[in-house]
Length: 54
Image 1: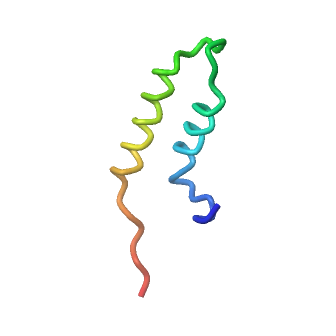
Image 2: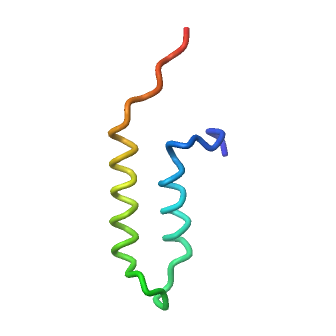
């Protein structure tokens, strides 16, 4: 909320919510969700920062 919900963070937020809701009854293993989160973070970190405005 502090960052005004930037689109670039959306995949990380989805991963965090999904991991927070996961339980052993899901068909998806938690390791897959963790890997998805790592991939989303790596993608976010590889993006160019927005240009600064003077």
